Length: 357
Image 1: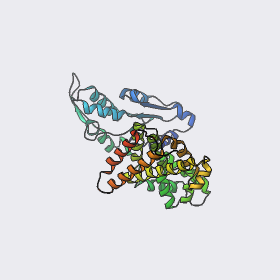
Image 2 (image 1 turned 120 degrees about the vertical axis):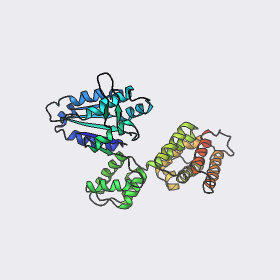
Image 3 (image 1 turned 45 degrees about the vertical axis):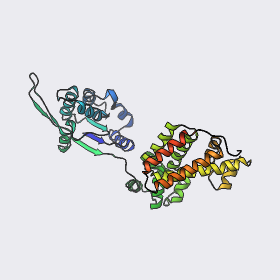
Image 4 (image 1 turned 90 degrees about the vertical axis):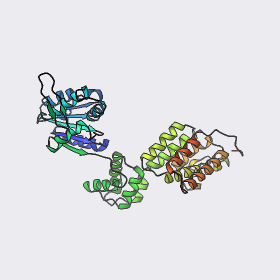
Protein backbone atom coordinates (compact mmCIF):
# COMPACT_ATOMS: atom_id res chain seq x y z
CA UNK A 1 0.00 0.00 0.00
CA UNK A 2 1.10 3.57 -0.71
CA UNK A 3 0.42 6.40 1.74
CA UNK A 4 0.81 10.09 0.90
CA UNK A 5 1.00 12.60 3.76
CA UNK A 6 0.85 16.23 2.61
CA UNK A 7 1.37 19.49 4.53
CA UNK A 8 2.82 17.11 7.03
CA UNK A 9 3.11 18.31 10.61
CA UNK A 10 6.30 16.68 11.88
CA UNK A 11 4.65 15.12 14.90
CA UNK A 12 1.56 13.83 13.09
CA UNK A 13 3.71 12.34 10.32
CA UNK A 14 5.98 10.69 12.91
CA UNK A 15 2.91 9.13 14.56
CA UNK A 16 1.69 7.69 11.27
CA UNK A 17 5.13 6.30 10.44
CA UNK A 18 5.46 4.76 13.92
CA UNK A 19 2.11 3.02 13.43
CA UNK A 20 3.24 1.61 10.07
CA UNK A 21 6.49 0.42 11.64
CA UNK A 22 4.58 -1.24 14.49
CA UNK A 23 2.47 -3.11 11.93
CA UNK A 24 5.62 -4.91 10.77
CA UNK A 25 5.68 -6.92 13.98
CA UNK A 26 8.77 -7.59 16.09
CA UNK A 27 10.55 -4.23 16.70
CA UNK A 28 14.02 -5.62 16.02
CA UNK A 29 12.96 -7.17 12.73
CA UNK A 30 10.99 -4.01 11.87
CA UNK A 31 14.18 -1.94 12.04
CA UNK A 32 15.81 -4.34 9.60
CA UNK A 33 12.88 -3.96 7.23
CA UNK A 34 12.69 -0.17 7.14
CA UNK A 35 14.41 2.28 4.82
CA UNK A 36 14.25 6.08 4.80
CA UNK A 37 15.13 8.22 1.79
CA UNK A 38 15.48 11.99 1.95
CA UNK A 39 17.25 14.80 0.12
CA UNK A 40 19.43 13.79 -2.81
CA UNK A 41 18.95 10.10 -1.97
CA UNK A 42 15.20 10.36 -2.62
CA UNK A 43 15.05 9.66 -6.35
CA UNK A 44 12.41 7.68 -8.29
CA UNK A 45 14.92 4.93 -9.10
CA UNK A 46 16.04 4.67 -5.45
CA UNK A 47 12.42 4.49 -4.31
CA UNK A 48 11.63 1.64 -6.69
CA UNK A 49 14.82 -0.20 -5.74
CA UNK A 50 13.98 -0.05 -2.03
CA UNK A 51 10.32 -0.91 -2.61
CA UNK A 52 11.24 -3.95 -4.71
CA UNK A 53 13.49 -5.49 -2.07
CA UNK A 54 12.08 -8.55 -0.36
CA UNK A 55 11.45 -8.21 3.39
CA UNK A 56 13.76 -10.08 5.73
CA UNK A 57 11.92 -12.64 7.91
CA UNK A 58 8.80 -10.49 7.74
CA UNK A 59 5.71 -10.17 5.58
CA UNK A 60 6.25 -6.53 4.67
CA UNK A 61 8.89 -3.86 4.33
CA UNK A 62 8.47 -0.12 5.11
CA UNK A 63 9.98 2.56 2.86
CA UNK A 64 9.63 6.21 3.97
CA UNK A 65 10.43 8.92 1.40
CA UNK A 66 10.61 12.57 2.44
CA UNK A 67 10.51 15.55 0.10
CA UNK A 68 10.67 13.74 -3.24
CA UNK A 69 7.32 14.93 -4.60
CA UNK A 70 7.80 18.52 -3.42
CA UNK A 71 11.22 18.77 -5.07
CA UNK A 72 10.09 17.04 -8.25
CA UNK A 73 6.98 19.22 -8.47
CA UNK A 74 9.06 22.41 -8.26
CA UNK A 75 11.47 21.17 -10.95
CA UNK A 76 8.54 20.34 -13.22
CA UNK A 77 7.20 23.85 -12.66
CA UNK A 78 10.44 25.26 -14.02
CA UNK A 79 10.49 22.92 -17.04
CA UNK A 80 9.30 24.17 -20.40
CA UNK A 81 8.92 20.75 -21.96
CA UNK A 82 7.38 17.43 -20.94
CA UNK A 83 10.55 15.87 -22.36
CA UNK A 84 12.71 17.44 -19.62
CA UNK A 85 14.56 15.35 -17.05
CA UNK A 86 12.07 16.34 -14.34
CA UNK A 87 9.12 15.09 -16.41
CA UNK A 88 11.00 11.91 -17.30
CA UNK A 89 11.58 11.20 -13.60
CA UNK A 90 7.95 11.99 -12.79
CA UNK A 91 6.78 9.61 -15.53
CA UNK A 92 9.07 6.90 -14.16
CA UNK A 93 7.76 7.35 -10.64
CA UNK A 94 4.04 7.69 -11.44
CA UNK A 95 3.99 4.76 -13.85
CA UNK A 96 5.84 2.49 -11.42
CA UNK A 97 3.65 3.28 -8.42
CA UNK A 98 1.12 0.87 -9.92
CA UNK A 99 3.68 -1.91 -9.56
CA UNK A 100 4.64 -1.49 -5.90
CA UNK A 101 4.54 -5.04 -4.49
CA UNK A 102 2.19 -6.02 -1.65
CA UNK A 103 5.26 -6.75 0.43
CA UNK A 104 6.03 -3.00 0.64
CA UNK A 105 4.42 -0.17 2.59
CA UNK A 106 5.53 2.99 0.79
CA UNK A 107 5.08 6.27 2.70
CA UNK A 108 5.56 9.60 0.88
CA UNK A 109 5.88 12.65 3.16
CA UNK A 110 5.82 16.08 1.52
CA UNK A 111 4.97 19.69 2.24
CA UNK A 112 2.89 20.31 -0.84
CA UNK A 113 2.19 19.46 -4.46
CA UNK A 114 0.82 22.11 -6.82
CA UNK A 115 -2.53 20.78 -8.04
CA UNK A 116 -2.22 22.81 -11.23
CA UNK A 117 0.84 20.91 -12.43
CA UNK A 118 1.49 17.63 -14.14
CA UNK A 119 2.59 15.70 -11.07
CA UNK A 120 -0.92 16.09 -9.65
CA UNK A 121 -3.04 16.33 -12.82
CA UNK A 122 -1.06 13.96 -15.03
CA UNK A 123 0.45 14.71 -18.42
CA UNK A 124 1.10 13.27 -21.85
CA UNK A 125 4.57 11.92 -22.53
CA UNK A 126 5.36 12.40 -26.24
CA UNK A 127 6.49 9.56 -28.47
CA UNK A 128 10.23 8.98 -28.54
CA UNK A 129 11.94 6.43 -30.77
CA UNK A 130 10.13 3.11 -30.44
CA UNK A 131 8.07 4.38 -27.49
CA UNK A 132 4.61 5.61 -28.46
CA UNK A 133 2.91 8.61 -26.91
CA UNK A 134 1.42 7.74 -23.55
CA UNK A 135 -0.75 9.37 -20.91
CA UNK A 136 0.74 9.44 -17.42
CA UNK A 137 -1.78 9.41 -14.59
CA UNK A 138 -1.03 12.01 -11.94
CA UNK A 139 -1.32 11.69 -8.18
CA UNK A 140 -4.96 12.78 -8.29
CA UNK A 141 -5.93 9.87 -10.54
CA UNK A 142 -3.91 7.41 -8.46
CA UNK A 143 -5.65 8.60 -5.29
CA UNK A 144 -9.09 8.27 -6.91
CA UNK A 145 -8.16 4.79 -8.13
CA UNK A 146 -7.15 3.94 -4.53
CA UNK A 147 -3.59 3.16 -5.57
CA UNK A 148 -2.56 5.85 -3.08
CA UNK A 149 -4.21 6.68 0.24
CA UNK A 150 -3.71 10.42 0.83
CA UNK A 151 -4.08 12.41 4.03
CA UNK A 152 -3.39 16.06 4.81
CA UNK A 153 -1.62 16.40 8.16
CA UNK A 154 -1.78 20.14 8.73
CA UNK A 155 -0.92 21.45 12.18
CA UNK A 156 -4.23 22.52 13.78
CA UNK A 157 -4.78 26.28 13.75
CA UNK A 158 -5.50 28.16 17.03
CA UNK A 159 -9.27 27.70 16.59
CA UNK A 160 -9.11 23.93 16.08
CA UNK A 161 -6.17 23.19 18.39
CA UNK A 162 -8.32 22.88 21.57
CA UNK A 163 -10.53 20.33 19.79
CA UNK A 164 -7.46 18.33 18.76
CA UNK A 165 -6.19 18.31 22.33
CA UNK A 166 -9.57 17.31 23.76
CA UNK A 167 -9.82 14.46 21.25
CA UNK A 168 -6.33 13.32 22.21
CA UNK A 169 -7.29 13.37 25.89
CA UNK A 170 -10.50 11.39 25.26
CA UNK A 171 -8.59 8.77 23.28
CA UNK A 172 -6.36 8.23 26.31
CA UNK A 173 -9.14 8.41 28.89
CA UNK A 174 -7.62 11.56 30.39
CA UNK A 175 -10.11 13.92 32.04
CA UNK A 176 -9.31 17.59 31.45
CA UNK A 177 -11.43 20.67 32.05
CA UNK A 178 -12.21 23.00 29.15
CA UNK A 179 -10.42 25.86 30.89
CA UNK A 180 -7.32 23.71 31.28
CA UNK A 181 -7.40 22.90 27.56
CA UNK A 182 -7.50 26.63 26.74
CA UNK A 183 -4.63 27.49 29.09
CA UNK A 184 -2.49 24.59 27.86
CA UNK A 185 -3.01 25.56 24.20
CA UNK A 186 -2.22 29.19 25.04
CA UNK A 187 0.97 28.24 26.89
CA UNK A 188 2.34 25.72 24.38
CA UNK A 189 0.88 26.86 21.04
CA UNK A 190 0.87 24.56 18.02
CA UNK A 191 3.80 22.34 19.02
CA UNK A 192 1.86 19.05 18.98
CA UNK A 193 4.70 16.96 20.34
CA UNK A 194 5.07 19.23 23.36
CA UNK A 195 1.29 19.39 23.84
CA UNK A 196 1.10 15.62 23.88
CA UNK A 197 4.00 15.34 26.33
CA UNK A 198 2.50 17.98 28.63
CA UNK A 199 -0.87 16.20 28.56
CA UNK A 200 0.79 12.97 29.72
CA UNK A 201 2.70 14.82 32.44
CA UNK A 202 -0.43 16.57 33.67
CA UNK A 203 -2.38 13.28 33.74
CA UNK A 204 0.24 11.79 36.05
CA UNK A 205 0.16 14.90 38.22
CA UNK A 206 -3.65 14.91 38.47
CA UNK A 207 -3.61 11.19 39.35
CA UNK A 208 -7.07 10.33 38.05
CA UNK A 209 -8.94 13.55 38.75
CA UNK A 210 -9.75 16.07 35.97
CA UNK A 211 -6.84 18.33 35.00
CA UNK A 212 -7.58 21.94 36.02
CA UNK A 213 -6.27 25.30 34.77
CA UNK A 214 -4.38 25.59 38.07
CA UNK A 215 -2.60 22.30 37.31
CA UNK A 216 -1.49 23.64 33.93
CA UNK A 217 -0.19 26.89 35.42
CA UNK A 218 1.69 24.95 38.10
CA UNK A 219 3.27 22.37 35.81
CA UNK A 220 3.69 23.92 32.34
CA UNK A 221 5.93 26.81 31.30
CA UNK A 222 4.38 29.48 29.08
CA UNK A 223 6.08 29.14 25.68
CA UNK A 224 4.83 32.54 24.51
CA UNK A 225 6.30 34.15 27.65
CA UNK A 226 9.63 32.48 26.91
CA UNK A 227 9.52 33.83 23.35
CA UNK A 228 8.85 37.34 24.69
CA UNK A 229 11.93 36.97 26.88
CA UNK A 230 13.93 35.90 23.81
CA UNK A 231 12.82 39.12 22.12
CA UNK A 232 13.58 41.24 25.20
CA UNK A 233 17.01 39.64 25.48
CA UNK A 234 17.79 40.41 21.82
CA UNK A 235 16.68 44.02 22.31
CA UNK A 236 18.87 44.38 25.39
CA UNK A 237 21.86 42.94 23.52
CA UNK A 238 21.22 45.32 20.58
CA UNK A 239 20.97 42.41 18.12
CA UNK A 240 18.53 43.48 15.37
CA UNK A 241 18.59 40.22 13.39
CA UNK A 242 18.00 38.12 16.49
CA UNK A 243 15.24 40.49 17.63
CA UNK A 244 13.40 40.23 14.30
CA UNK A 245 13.78 36.45 14.36
CA UNK A 246 12.22 36.35 17.84
CA UNK A 247 9.41 38.62 16.65
CA UNK A 248 8.67 36.35 13.67
CA UNK A 249 8.57 33.35 16.01
CA UNK A 250 5.95 35.12 18.10
CA UNK A 251 3.95 35.90 14.97
CA UNK A 252 4.15 32.25 13.87
CA UNK A 253 2.80 31.36 17.30
CA UNK A 254 -0.27 33.45 16.43
CA UNK A 255 0.50 36.28 18.84
CA UNK A 256 -1.37 39.41 17.74
CA UNK A 257 0.51 42.76 17.62
CA UNK A 258 -1.44 44.36 20.48
CA UNK A 259 -0.80 41.32 22.66
CA UNK A 260 2.90 41.35 21.80
CA UNK A 261 3.14 45.06 22.55
CA UNK A 262 1.51 44.54 25.96
CA UNK A 263 3.87 41.66 26.75
CA UNK A 264 6.96 43.68 25.75
CA UNK A 265 5.76 46.62 27.85
CA UNK A 266 5.24 44.27 30.80
CA UNK A 267 8.84 43.08 30.50
CA UNK A 268 10.19 46.62 30.39
CA UNK A 269 8.13 47.62 33.44
CA UNK A 270 9.62 44.64 35.26
CA UNK A 271 13.12 45.72 34.24
CA UNK A 272 12.51 49.21 35.65
CA UNK A 273 11.14 47.82 38.92
CA UNK A 274 13.99 45.37 39.37
CA UNK A 275 16.65 47.90 38.43
CA UNK A 276 15.23 50.29 41.04
CA UNK A 277 15.33 47.64 43.75
CA UNK A 278 18.84 46.54 42.79
CA UNK A 279 19.98 50.18 42.84
CA UNK A 280 18.77 50.31 46.45
CA UNK A 281 21.07 47.42 47.33
CA UNK A 282 18.84 44.35 46.98
CA UNK A 283 20.37 41.46 45.01
CA UNK A 284 18.61 38.28 46.13
CA UNK A 285 16.28 37.09 43.37
CA UNK A 286 13.91 35.38 45.79
CA UNK A 287 13.57 38.46 47.96
CA UNK A 288 13.00 40.63 44.89
CA UNK A 289 10.43 38.18 43.52
CA UNK A 290 8.56 38.16 46.83
CA UNK A 291 8.63 41.96 47.10
CA UNK A 292 7.28 42.49 43.57
CA UNK A 293 4.95 39.50 43.47
CA UNK A 294 6.69 37.76 40.56
CA UNK A 295 7.92 34.20 40.19
CA UNK A 296 11.67 33.74 40.72
CA UNK A 297 12.32 32.56 37.16
CA UNK A 298 11.38 35.79 35.30
CA UNK A 299 13.07 37.85 38.01
CA UNK A 300 16.31 35.96 37.44
CA UNK A 301 16.04 36.60 33.69
CA UNK A 302 15.37 40.31 34.26
CA UNK A 303 18.30 40.64 36.67
CA UNK A 304 20.62 39.46 33.91
CA UNK A 305 19.31 42.14 31.54
CA UNK A 306 19.01 45.26 33.68
CA UNK A 307 22.71 46.10 33.46
CA UNK A 308 22.31 46.43 29.69
CA UNK A 309 20.17 49.54 30.26
CA UNK A 310 20.34 52.85 32.06
CA UNK A 311 17.19 54.18 33.75
CA UNK A 312 16.99 56.81 31.02
CA UNK A 313 17.02 54.17 28.30
CA UNK A 314 14.32 52.10 29.98
CA UNK A 315 12.09 55.14 30.40
CA UNK A 316 12.66 56.10 26.75
CA UNK A 317 11.67 52.54 25.73
CA UNK A 318 8.45 52.82 27.75
CA UNK A 319 7.66 56.15 26.07
CA UNK A 320 8.19 54.56 22.65
CA UNK A 321 5.96 51.62 23.63
CA UNK A 322 3.22 54.06 24.64
CA UNK A 323 3.53 55.85 21.28
CA UNK A 324 3.21 52.52 19.45
CA UNK A 325 0.17 51.58 21.54
CA UNK A 326 -1.59 54.84 20.64
CA UNK A 327 -0.68 54.44 16.95
CA UNK A 328 -1.97 50.86 16.82
CA UNK A 329 -5.26 51.84 18.40
CA UNK A 330 -5.82 54.86 16.13
CA UNK A 331 -5.52 53.33 12.70
CA UNK A 332 -1.83 52.52 12.10
CA UNK A 333 -1.02 49.15 10.55
CA UNK A 334 -0.33 47.05 13.63
CA UNK A 335 2.18 44.63 12.09
CA UNK A 336 4.17 47.47 10.54
CA UNK A 337 4.14 49.39 13.82
CA UNK A 338 5.46 46.44 15.84
CA UNK A 339 8.15 45.80 13.21
CA UNK A 340 9.32 49.42 13.33
CA UNK A 341 9.25 49.44 17.14
CA UNK A 342 11.40 46.32 17.44
CA UNK A 343 13.83 47.65 14.83
CA UNK A 344 14.20 50.95 16.70
CA UNK A 345 14.62 49.41 20.14
CA UNK A 346 17.18 46.89 18.90
CA UNK A 347 19.52 49.42 17.25
CA UNK A 348 19.09 52.40 19.56
CA UNK A 349 22.48 53.65 20.74
CA UNK A 350 23.30 53.62 24.41
CA UNK A 351 23.11 56.96 26.14
CA UNK A 352 24.59 58.22 29.37
CA UNK A 353 22.23 57.68 32.29
CA UNK A 354 20.12 60.62 33.41
CA UNK A 355 20.56 59.49 37.00
CA UNK A 356 22.90 57.13 38.72
CA UNK A 357 22.17 53.42 38.69
